[in-house]
Length: 135
Figure 1 (tube, helix red, strand yellow):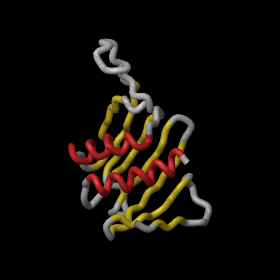
Figure 2 (cartoon, helix red, strand yellow):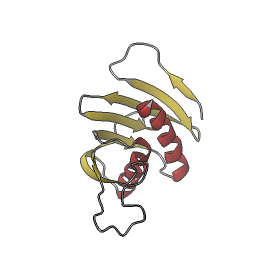
Figure 3 (cartoon, helix red, strand yellow):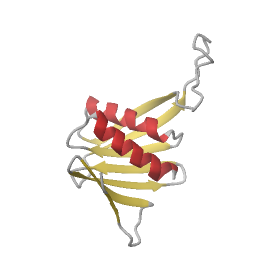
């Protein structure tokens, strides 16, 4: 995996291209007052748009060991709403998986356009997103 970043002033907080399995993957990130905006594409265009809302999961049954919330705050429920472009269960599942890398409570507007969705690709993107978003 290689990464390139632009140094010219941009309208977004972060823009970069990383190469994943020979495919240039563009990542654009911007934080607004109450939302995050992410474009992740290997097609050099916006493929779809989803809105993701995160909710803390509170299991009141007490059946889980040590309570329901994970020690790292990873027990979250995500509501995903498709708002534009092609929709697929595979894309929604990939977005849910990527959200585990971010651990954000802010609403996220995301576009995901990958040539192939698999765990290795999502792990590389997730690791890069963690660096970008969590700094």
